[in-house]
Image (cartoon, rainbow, N blue to C red; front, top):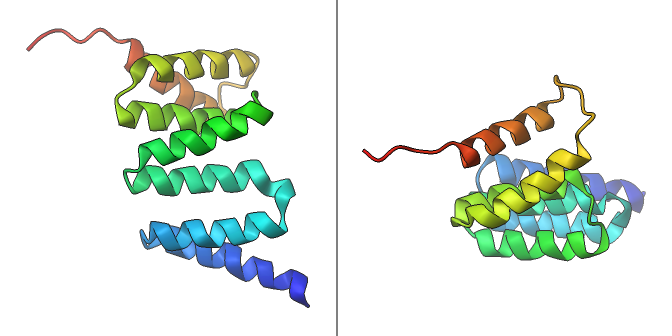
Amino acid sequence: MDHIKIFQSYGNAQLYLFHKKFKEAIKEFYIVLTNFPDMKNHLIKQIMICHNENNDFQSAIKIGNDILQKDPNSPSIILEIVKSYISDGDTERAKEHLTKLLSIWEDADEEYLRFQDAKKLWKELNTVKEPA
């Protein structure tokens, strides 16, 4: 039952992510991606999370931008790339992507957690901070 073995890789990836073993998690997510390309956006998002948690923001940004070339309206990828840009200190690009994301989600339910997360990020990026 070879097709079931892939679930072990996905489970291992999640465990590695939980235990902050990001390089190992990335390897496992890529194994799953090789066998389940239909899950590409979800798996790439997970890989981006691993890179962000490992403070490798440029890798997360590159992977995210590669996906956005083929699927420019992928909200989960856009949200994760926004987080990458913020963490990397590039607030202007984060704002660009966040604006696009909020336009995609303009009719989203207020209770939708990712929409709430995006609005919170928008507010943080657009709040003027007074000098100390």
